[in-house]
Amino acid sequence: MYRANLIDAIKLPFRKEKGLYRSFYYILGFYPHNIKYYQEALMHSSMLAKSNVGKPMNNERLEFLGDAILNAVVGEIVFHHFQRKREGFLTTARSKIVKRETLGQVAVEIGLDKLIHANNFTHAHNSYMAGNAFEALVGAIYLDRGYNYCVQFIQDKILGKIINIDKIAYKECNFKSKLLEWCQKNKVEMSFEQEESRGEDGSPMFHSKVLIQGMELGKGRGYSKKESQQNACKNALHRLKKGNKVYETLIQNNAIKQE
Image (tube, rainbow, N blue to C red; front, side, top):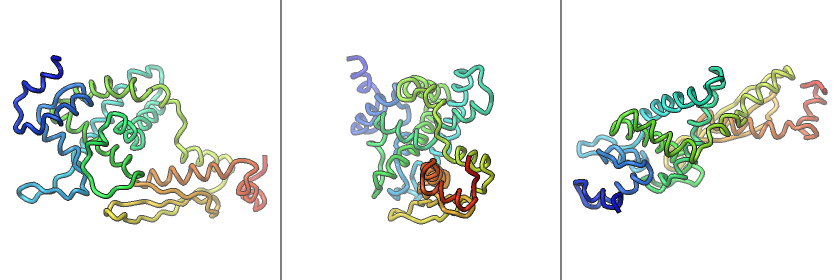
């Protein structure tokens, strides 16, 4: 009863914002001081919103700030959690936790995706957009409450409840590195071809092809160059399995040596 009534004790500029305060309380575990930061974190650029003086209003600047804060917070947590691991492992573990795909899943789990204001997005882009909004949310928390609250939010609400830090740290998901290792082992050259297009909403879409000895082995697309390359490498690795026609073709063309 106390938690339910606490929000009524907060003096709000508009009564209609009480619902938003409650939503953020369930997501964050605390009430915002300045709700405007959080409203901005939910505003995607596709809304084309502007302030009274004509300044664009969207979450891109908060996303930039949140990305930096999130890397620092997760880096500190990973550092203390894996006390016997070296720098390389810690860097990889942090990158797996803060990558856009993971953050998008987290945003959906906590219900943040349902609060985002955006226009004309496909289901595939929604996860990416939600990951951006999550970074913007962290930026909003930092400006509103400070670094310690960011740490509290990530520790109490994300790691251990939604993300299993041990499971994700040891999970092999860097397809580009795996394909590069395969190429180095077989002494063949790997290269990428990349194109960029625009969706109906104006957002960039990247298309990658990965080539082994000039032979196209995989295609991938994504809302960043890195994401499209990872998807292309994932497809290429699937096609390179022994017994696959592509693998046999490379052997026949003497591109790789049969083991």
